[in-house]
Length: 457
Image 1: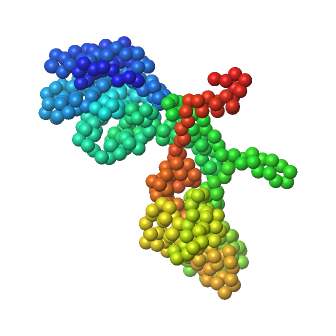
Image 2: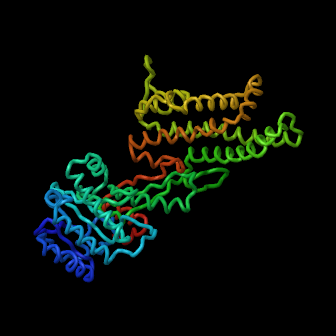
Image 3: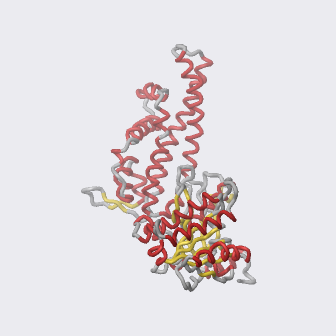
């Protein structure tokens, strides 16, 4: 896309002759009559949208604005701006749907597009989907307000633009989400679509896929699973690489749900009717089944936390204990330091977290570790006390702390390096993936190696 030469501060173009005629009769002519010159452009479809491959095609109606228009005309009491919004309303009345209905909307295609060019050359592209006229008028008005806030120096919008990917640092996309216009990162948008499709068929206990997009054409990409070749008993098996945290937490959750069902339907009922003190032999069998479930959940809750912590210590990280001289690498940290020490010192150092001991979940973790240690390193004089504790009502909260802890660290890890989210297990609120980028040459090389070595691109 090349920004068109504007004779005025505003221009328009339709992607088809019919829409070009609508713009001429409902937009350009009436505004010219009241003193606002609107350029009616003649552009090929390929000239209307950026050529980075993100958009599927041009919108029906396309409006181009520059910074001078916002500075000079965007005022609620400005008569020309009132006429502009009125003419837009006439178009929405003609083309907009008669009633609002729920549709799957993607920023990669739209009915109306508003292009805004800043004086520094950056272009914002607002994608407005078809809807009833009143909704369209409201959202269009918010477009002008969004741009005005940007011109006035809104730091949140500027920061969102800086964080968003743009090929050649030029085109940025804006979508309507949660009743407001927001900068949309095209990399994350494309990757989320790929990831959503992947999750429909993949077992969520595996590692997330690697997604690599061509930097100048986001339609071209490769998606690779992380495979392992497992060799055992003379056999070779190719499998998707499991995510330890995902696998352990799944074991924990399945057993915890089953244990909770038994607890609610059996133990609580008996105590409600004062029959829990002396269960008969058949009922005691159910208690032992419960102990199997809750003990399994307990062990794998702790294991999932430990696996999570170890996996997010960088390979090149080293640590020296306060007052010590020996430098510990990742391998030694994993083997020798207890979990709570890693949380208090290692992850706090790496990700600049708050002191975890001040968090509400810390006491639950301490109890989880104590019960886990008593289970793994069984000592008979603690056993009666431990089994009593497994029957207490708050045991489910204690075991469920693994989910709280992983969610807690997810926010810090994402801020530290957004690519690390690719190693985060599914089902903890951080299911998104962040893609890598490749050049056109790399894309062709991979394609030729995989598909067409005898007749390369």
